Amino acid sequence: DAKTTQPPSMDCAEGRAANLPCNHSTISGNEYVYWYRQIHSQGPQYIIHGLKNNETNEMASLIITEDRKSSTLILPHATLRDTAVYYCIVRVATGNTGKLIFGQGTTLQVKP
Amino acid sequence: EPEVTQTPSHQVTQMGQEVILRCVPISNHLYFYWYRQILGQKVEFLVSFYNNEISEKSEIFDDQFSVERPDGSNFTLKIRSTKLEDSAMYFCASSEGGRGIEKLFFGSGTQLSVL
Image (tube, rainbow over all chains, first blue to last red; front, side, top):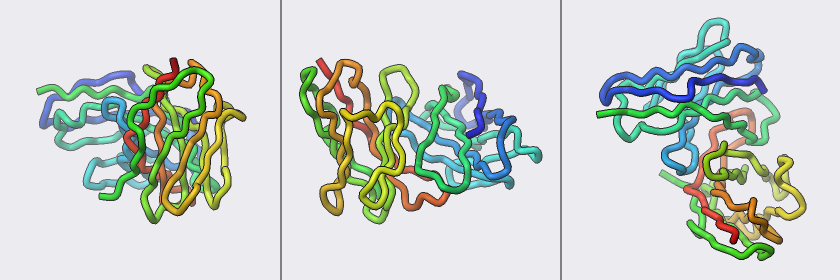
């Protein structure tokens, strides 16, 4: 699985968009980008995933560059409850067994 | 929204004792997992389970660990002889399908303290 690089921490003002970057320059063509978050030692929570195209759901948007070497998770209107550690994970698309490799992630602090 | 339920939320045990951590996955899910997180460290994969057998396990998941789906609803992790270094938060997770969509649903965890 491709390695990912994320900034260790970021701040965001409440109500503003939070843009969390992830570098995955060694990603292969059959690997998806997944985003999870972990709020204060709770179980990780799935946010979104994508392969090539940008994706949006009720929680966030995922922007993947054309060369797929990096992506950005966007929380459009961050709230205090979005304060969490955000993990960018890359996984192959087939033959998976649910083995997610979590890195250190980005600690997002949303401030009033 | 359906959720993964774990019991107990906290478990304290003496070194060398056996512990069983319990989980009730989401009812229509077919794939089950255990992860753990030592305080201040990364979330680590332990094992995945499908069709009543282990699909994959990590190096951490040695002979002291075992998993079981004793009935149609529960999924358990047993540690036969606990060590101090087994102290961690243990997360159970489940997913609907293993065909490349790693949308796992995690429980709130069991905090295991080995004294």
